[in-house]
Structures are given as C-alpha cells and as structure tokens.
Image 1 (cartoon, helix red, strand yellow):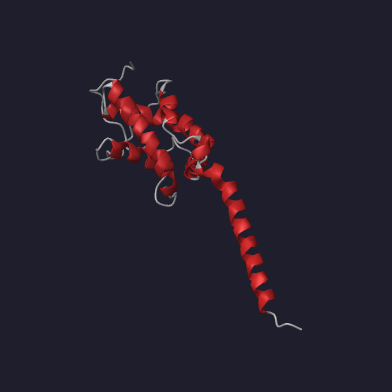
Image 2 (tube, helix red, strand yellow):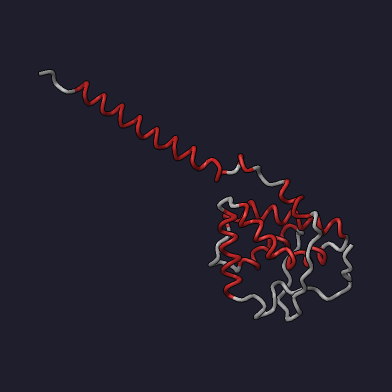
Length: 174
C-alpha cells in the first residue's frame, strides 16, 4: 500500500504554473485525439504520461487504496470512451482528465493552488486491468476501416454497373 497521508492539504485542481510546458500539453492533446480515434498505442502512451499525476489525486479522493485503484481504472476507461469528445480549445488535456477523475469520484474540482504537484506511479497491475476492459483489436473500429472502405467501393462499382446496364437497355434499337 502506498503511504499517502489522508490528513494532508488538498491538491491543486491543476499543476502549478510552469510545471506543464506547452510542448507537453500539445503532446497530451495529440494523444487524446489519437485515443479518440481508437488508437490503443496512443492511449497506452497517454496512460504512461499522465498516470503518475492522476494516481495521487485518486488516492487523495479515495484514501483506501482499493477504492483509489477502482476510481483510477474507472477514470481511464472513461478517458478512453470519451476521448473523442475532448476539444483542446475548451480545456487543457490534463485539466480535462483531472475533471473526469473528479466527476467519477462525484466531487467538484478544487480551486487552483500553488501546492507542489506530486507524482506517484500507480501499482503495476492497474494498466493490465484497464487494458483487459478495452475492446479487442478485432472489435476496434480501426480494424474495420479497410473492410468498410472495400465494401463502399464495391457498392459504388455495382451501382455504376447497374446504371450502365439500365442505360444500355434504354438505348433505342438501330
């Protein structure tokens, strides 16, 4: 169990100024967009980048580690399913994910503060628990992309052939 004192001061709603650089924020936004398109590798990278930042918040909101772990897993599953709804013009990527964590905990986000941003990696078994609940590769929409494209092209070709055959049948006889 991680030692995390439940009586400590509340954490900031977002990292203090200067701790998230614009390049990192752009990278997180890109990973969220790719995750929204069903890219599991992008989601895995996103997890590795933000999990050490979100896990301390989950522990703060749910001091019992089992409850914090469940909240953390639930939050990442919601990040996966809602990533296509993220808009970088509305909020920063990390702020959006923190808001999802607080929503899953049914708590309002705290007011910003200058408290240092702690990082604590989640237990190793949490990523496999998240990954096990994601759709399999063959069920992903990205794996269906090429069969759908081929079906669409075949449909168009069949439509063109049918139209041509009708036009040839309507042509006056010589």
